[in-house]
Length: 319
Image (cartoon, rainbow, N blue to C red; front, side):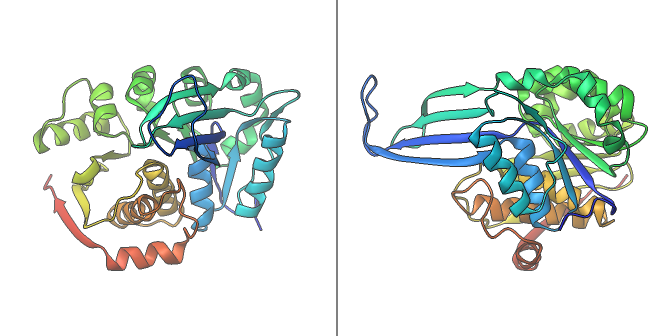
């Protein structure tokens, strides 16, 4: 059971119903294509919340849903996964955000439709109505879908709770780069980091320069994901890179979401930064070893097993 009297981490953002069609043979435009259709619950912040709950983090998630059948199913799913969505904004007559894609026989997207109109109904008045929940959170995780709301939360709550940013994409990173000094933690990939620091990252020297740029702004913890090169971390005192070797890759979708969940787990359990990075990498490694966005067996026990079995490469930089 979720215990809201205990310390909790808060996730704030969008939930998305994903519909993906996979064609069996060559994709034919303007025609019906034999294949298979898969549906799942997605959205970066929703994925993060579920992954956090799966490894035992006391998680609350404020999202926006329609009062349609999809929204009701998402609420039911959150109860089964043990994260609290009870403070979410439910829009009467609204459509829960939906993403519908068609992929060809190579797995490449050939077309998609995105229905996200409902997220415009997040307002500052709604944020104010959740002020107590935000202020009482140990950490609050945000993405950059609504830069105006991100700015409002920083202005009004950054002194009360520690804010964590997942920029989500290079395009969206550009919309929040002027706000990053208000965050306790940022988790960009290399390209998002380049946009936010203003220069290219070609090598370790550039990487360290970016880390210093961010920590000099007052950001407490910086995690830059480097794909097959691992993770760069910097908290102002400790700095380095950690890589998991020989990791099986089936589908990288959701890897960043599970990594953020691993960071939250480390924070909520007062784990040092190196072990936090390893925990987060292990969660990502579990995620990319399956076709699913969230591994159906994700758990603290499975993460611990992965940590012990992974061959790690670690580099520590001297300050």
